[in-house]
Each structure stands twice: as C-alpha cells, then as structure tokens.
Amino acid sequence: MNAIAAPSKGAATRELILEQAYQLARHDGLEGLSIGTLALGVGMSKSGVFAHFGSREDLQLALLDFVSTRFVEFIKLPALKKPRGLPRLRAMIENWSEWGHIHQSGCVLLSAAVEYDGRQDSTLREHVRQQQSAWRDEIKRAVGLAVQVGDLRTDTDPSLLAFEIYALMLGLHHDAGLFGWEEANRHTSAALDRLFASYQP
Amino acid sequence: MNAIAAPSKGAATRELILEQAYQLARHDGLEGLSIGTLALGVGMSKSGVFAHFGSREDLQLALLDFVSTRFVEFIKLPALKKPRGLPRLRAMIENWSEWGHIHQSGCVLLSAAVEYDGRQDSTLREHVRQQQSAWRDEIKRAVGLAVQVGDLRTDTDPSLLAFEIYALMLGLHHDAGLFGWEEANRHTSAALDRLFASYQP
Image (cartoon, rainbow over all chains, first blue to last red; front, side, top):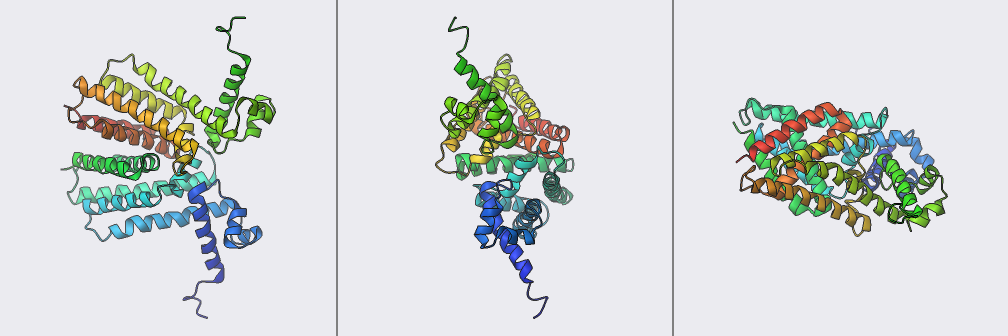
C-alpha cells in the first residue's frame, strides 16, 4: 500500500471521531461534550476514543483546530479569488455571514469564546484566545490591504475597523438566533454599508 | 408583625436562593446550574429548594427575571436623571459598559442567549427572546427620543441604530473576556463616537 495516497487507519478514525464530536458540540458546546455519547455515535468504546485522544481536553483542543480550519477555509479561500482591497474584504464578510447562517443554531468557535473567556489559566481558554487573535489578525490584514490599494481612507485604524466588523458579525449571530435570520441579515448589511461608507476615501 | 414592612420568610428564602443561583450561573450558565450545589450553598436540602421553585426550569425562569430586573435598574434608572436625547442614551450605554466590566467573566443574560438561541420550542428560549426583545425596545425608545429632540438625524432608523449599539456591546464583552478590558473598552468607545457622529444632524 502507498503510504502517501492512503491516510493511515488511525488518522481516518481520528477524523471520524472529530466529525462526530463537531456535530455534538454544535448543539452542546465544548464543555457539554460527553465522551460516552461520542463513543456511542462512532460505534466505539470510551477507551477506544481515548486511544486516539489522550484526554477529554486533548479532544476539545483538537476539535477547536478542526473547526477553525474549516472556518478559515470557508471564509478566506474563496475570497482570495477576488481582487485585493475592499472586494476581497467584503467577500470575506459575505462568506462569514453565510457561515453564520449555516451555524445559526450554534457555532462551536463562538460558543467556545463564551464558555472559556472567564476561565483564567486554562489551556482551553488560551487556545481560544490565540485562535480568535489569529482570526482578528486576518481581518486586520485584509483591512490593511484595502487601505494600501486606496479603497479605504489612509487614516483607517485596521484594528478598530476589524473590531467594528467583528462586533457586527456577533450582532448578526445573536439576532439571527433569537429574532430570525432575515431581519438580522438586513440590519447587518445596512450597518456594514454605513460602516464602509464612513471609511471611504 | 407588620405584613407590609417585613417580607414573608418564604419570600426572603426565595430571594436568598436566587442570589446564590445567580452567583453559580455567572460561572456555569443557566444550563450548568446544579440544584445539588445550589442547595448546599444555601444550607438546604434539594427538596427544600424545590419547595420554593416547582422545577429546575421554574428556577431558571425566575433567575432570568431576577437578573434582568437588576440589569435594567443598573442601566436605565441612573440614566433617567440625564436630559432626554443623546445624553440619556449615551449614559445608558456607559452604564451598560460598566455592567459588562463587572460581569466580564460571565453575564448570565448574554450566556442565556447563547445557550438557548438554537433550541426551538423551549420555554426558556422564548423567555430569553422576550427579554432581549424588550431590552432592544428600550434602546429603540431612547434612540427615538434623541431623534425627537433633534440630537440625531431625522432619517435615523431606531431599529438599525439599536442593532449597531447592541453589536458594539457584544463586541466589548467578547473582546474584554479574551483580550482584556482596556483595549476592548478603547475600541468600543472609539466605535461609539464614530457611530454617533455618523447620525449627527
């Protein structure tokens, strides 16, 4: 067998466990993740699951990376086809909204931020903080490019605009979950248009 | 004994249980609330707690009202001393930020929105939705007054501006929990100034 073409059975099982864990965590969050339910879902024993992930925390950390990779691929990769500057930044936000629409009833990454933001000195909190920080840097970079190509005012503070965009995405997710997607999306689109207009050169 | 001056022993015990439940829920959320831990904390048996609240759900609903009353009193009442219009609206937002600062490591109301937004047909979800909707109406009303007295442009959409304000408060809470209060507060203040400037008549 070709070791490059076929992933090892171990890696495939690991992927299967993470996929199932993802589905569970979308509903119950990372803290609500039950290894018993997870094992049942993949037709394994609990110790079978632990053979792939040393501990519950290791599994939660791996799951965060698993979802984060999906998130970035979903939002960033298609946007790279757009011209750099505002078109690419707005494409990223559009894909991000779409991710919010798909995960309206629960986004693992956002729930994790709420679950762990108050827990000092926890490995999970630090992991969530690093992920969120890396994502914010991606937005800042896209904002910076838009300033560079002249689509946004030269005195734009990328870190402030990235915060403003992030806040609107939080608002979209919050309102969609409680008041329905349509109104939430209408408000968010209008707010984004106003926001970008205020940074127009 | 004067029945008006002294609350019944039952009401006082109920208040004591809710206060303790509030402290627990600030850390673990409403779903993480354990009646066993709660009973231990107030020095009662589990059935003693259930004598005051018929079920776990009844306790969760009562707790939501308990926190919501505190929230509105903290934010709205002091702001009513300010002149109607932008000063009152901005005072509300300042108090709201202060609430966020105090509850940086976990706000029961906000966590509840995340916990229940995806659960269809749940009594708790409907309760959270109604609370959030009532609070959004308060902001819209304050915005409407600011338009009336000429502090904001006449074409201001109160429901859009209320959404934009709410989103920034979500951003503040999110960033404060992960990246620290100072930077989060600096970004939020700058964003609020930009937002209100864009609605200036």
